[in-house]
Structures are given as C-alpha cells and as structure tokens.
Image (cartoon, rainbow, N blue to C red; front, side):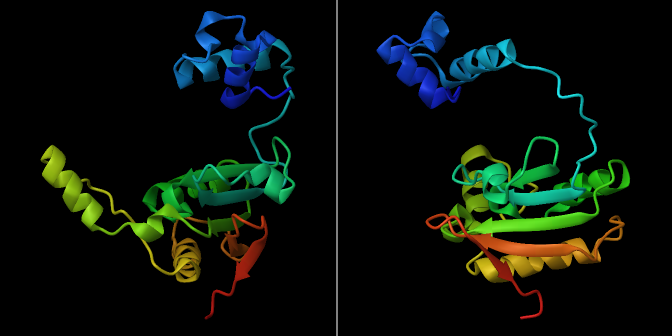
Length: 192
C-alpha cells in the first residue's frame, strides 16, 4: 500500500487504516499527512546498511517538477545516486556546490542533467524578480534562470558543469529532456 499523502487522505475518507490518527483525516494539513505517512513507513523500515556514497557513482541534476519520478524513470534503486533538484534543473552556484561535495567527498564521477517538456520556467521571465521586489521591498539575490529553449538551457547547464573549476570529473556529463507526456528521455547534443 502506498503511503503518499493522496493515499492517506483517500484512506481517511474510506475508513482505511492509515487514517486511524486524527491528523491524517481528509481535513488535515498536508504536512500532517506526510508525517503520518512517515510513521507508517518507519513501522516497517529496516536500515539498509548503506554508505552515503552512491553505488553507481552518478549525480542526477533535475527539475523539481512533481511529474518527474526520477528513480522510476531511470531504473534507479535507493542508494544508487545523488539527486539534486531545483526549479528548472538549472546548474546554479548551489548545484555546483552540491556536485562538488558529491564528487570530492562522496565519490561520484558522472553527471546526468534532466530538464523536461512543459517546464514552468518557460513561462517566467526575470520580471518575476522585479514583481517580488515591488511586493516585498527587496529584490531576490538569485536569478530566475527562466528560458525559452529547453534544449539550449540543457546545453548551458552542461557547459556550466564542464567549465567549473571545482569539479574533478567533467568528461561524463550528459544532458537530456524528459517528455512528461511520454516518459522518454531525449539526449541533447552539447555541440549544436
């Protein structure tokens, strides 16, 4: 049985066992539902005895989009990879930070970059920052990193990884676009 918050709420409305706690009912806040799901997960949890070093020595950089189930889409198991996600899957300074730690401290050697079709960043512009400044009185220090051409943005992200002086392993860096309607990856040629 799945312990996702959707299933927890469904079970609550139908009298299923995950909803025996009042915090998991249909009117519960989503974080309460997640905490309740964790309690059920922890009941059957067994320490896998894994090291923090990814078995496949790969780091996956991808968009935070909720439609991307990276482990399922890539055939990965717990412990296989490091997963670094942000809006757009864009290689920012913080992604370089995480990749540097992943490579230098935890032994990864390969980097796969995954953007996707119908990304929310395609509908934003840097005006988003100006609107925030107007609303809250302070402009964010970060860039939106919006884009119009997903293929070109993957190329830019590959280039940022390949030119970072902090990364040790830059020869196995590949970029892809995941089609959210078909579930398939399309590789991007960095040279185009």
